[in-house]
Image (cartoon, rainbow, N blue to C red; front, side, top):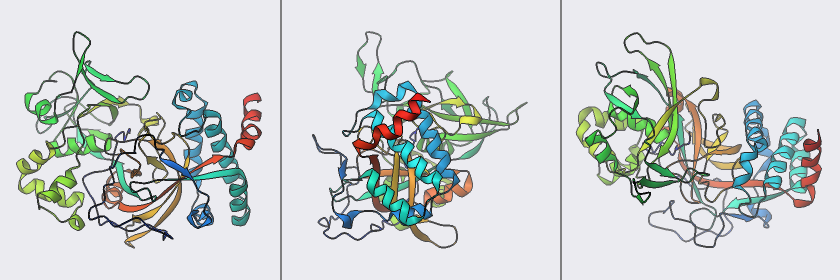
Length: 415
């Protein structure tokens, strides 16, 4: 969705938690962590782990694998099988063949269901394990959450349904391969920065280019932040559901609403949640809308078929708690990762979250090696989980050692 932007939920943040694994040597303390710190020029987002003390707990992650993980692996393998996936490699020194073979090998291991000891031994023998350098060079990554909301909507402006989601405009310029926004293309072919969110909303410059209408502007913004929505159509003569997803965004900077609310002193960071933001909106909608305009970035949408919704930036369906969104300018696409952090639960507060996932999405707020976003699912329950997800942790990638690539890939190509 493309987290799409698909991004962090950006609206609801919790308290910052420490890494799930203690460091032997740690980074210097910072008064305010800069999770959005860009990767230094000439640096790479991943480094090969050579110190056993920095290895993840593979046995525990294996115990947490399930049928949803296998499904997510198959969806990534379908993406790797498409010739178009080759254009994104090599990256971080990893070739397309190596990335595809790595996922095939890991999929085979998971399907075979070996003992924990055998699984750990096979992973150690077959794979090189990399860790993210994080925002601080010590591997610290901030994990937030996103979800696909469900809202009421109408295909025509009627009653309260007067707040539109817009289709992609013809003058939005993006990089053809990656979709990275460039700006607004003028008639002479030159490109200039796109209009701000406030200018777009207040001028109604896209009148006539509406995709669908929602019943309040905060709902529109929530869809922008998460990059997709399931819409229950209740306009005149309408019924059923409409599925919408990311179709592009402007080149303007992204600023999270939660960050702006904290900076204005409206809530403490440990008070932030989507329900709390909604309460402020009900009391003073203009105040919240003015803060929303502080996020200059703007997202456009298109209709999706329900069988491939919600789709991530790879074009495949994302899977609850098995799809991760990262910055695709610096992280390899489609592969198996391991997330070691904390996550909110419905009945037991924050608990350890140690799971294999697939790097299948990206997001407007997910820029730099210190950020990643966990897809929590669809609807109200997922909203709660996504809204409470704000914790530090570590991120690992798995790639076959070069000598094993042909062993796993060549037989598939000749079948």
